[in-house]
Image (cartoon, rainbow over all chains, first blue to last red; front, side):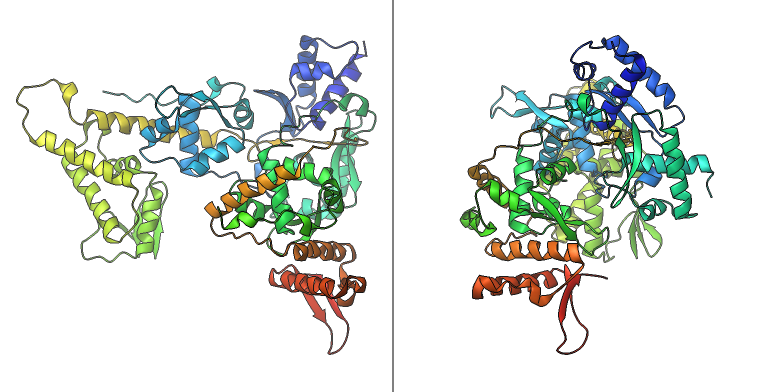
Length: 175
Length: 175
Length: 262
């Protein structure tokens, strides 16, 4: 077994270098021999986060694993770099997304029923291309419409590990 | 002037978040008011590197500026990550490639305009990494977007000597 | 001066808030388009009308709401907007509810037979998702609130194999692109001048390496007349697309190409 300091730095460097979140399994697989246990890895991640306490970044857990990211609060400065800022979404886009997220699996027809307007196919196409939404099956009704659901990547994007972390809906008294 | 600790964390977070190396000027431009001087920034980068002495990463200077990278010596472990090829053969990948091939030189914005969807930066990164696409200049419009074009290697891969051998889109009218 | 405020959806003309639109008021069609585009559909428009009157969704006074809704629709139609049919369907639904409420019910029914019930249910459900869409927009998300770190490895050589792509796949992808381009109509893809575009990339690449190149160096005399024409067209195209500047310091002196400066 490598010494602990080494393990810590290897895991840190893997998280730094990876483009995608790494699962505990991915991290264990970095080692050909003497694979650390998942608990050991979790412990290392905790320790790393402690040593990042005063830094601008941290390790967080999202749906598909762990990733290292800049803490919130720096957006004011960082909005100026990485110019591709497609970060503002239209009302129609967000409404379609939340209906899929909260009511999944849903068909296009379900979304139209709730919103009262035809769904812009470009919005669904974008959601599928971002890999935020995928087709999980077909409803056994005439036309066999596609059933849409959100993906883990959607959760990753919104810094969540599970759908239960979505903001809770307002309780509206239905009479 | 913000206090130094703050300045250090802002510069650190910018280097961490940026996809491209940042020049001293880029870093100064993060600040709307009280821009730090280039010497101040250099000093901060030195200080940051001192605090990274025991970590697995460091700030290095390359031709176009400063960037954070994992120190040498971790390659052995990390060769296993970033292997996901999901974006590679995707429709989005192929479409991005053909738009660059047929419309070159193009900016990312041009590609987005044609496809109607935001371009996944990873796709461009992969294309550049394969040396199928390279940056041939910058458009003199706000943000100075990169102009992308295909390379000789791209032609080689498809056994062509010139772009004019690409299949003509005779079906334009037919669609 | 016409302004709209996204939260309250007020329309201001010359500073005063317009809530009811007088019959004789001329509203520039563009302004109305702005109003219409603010609504995500008939339910959204109804919710706005309800909110504007400060009334409870569960007890909509169907008569005035229907009247206002129909006024909006008529106004939009008079101005010959292409109105989504969904708006008309809603107008019909409202008219039906109204008539059912006006006709006294033979049998004294219970509350649940309120003809408004279904509409109210839909409005409440839509309101719920509308609120959620605002909330999800506030959830910290990547590249706006948080930024992933992707450090570069010092000596990292990717050992991956190149993708295997066939020419037929490229062709297929290109057809897909053409279809899309048609949807996003403002773009027309020109392809007949591929050799010109290739030359543009080549010259740009040269310029970016050397900053300035002389006009004459762009031409390769071994290429013959066609090659010269292609090069010349490429230079003209780049000037047209504002990619380069052509510089000549004095008459008959050398001509240079350089990156465009503003």
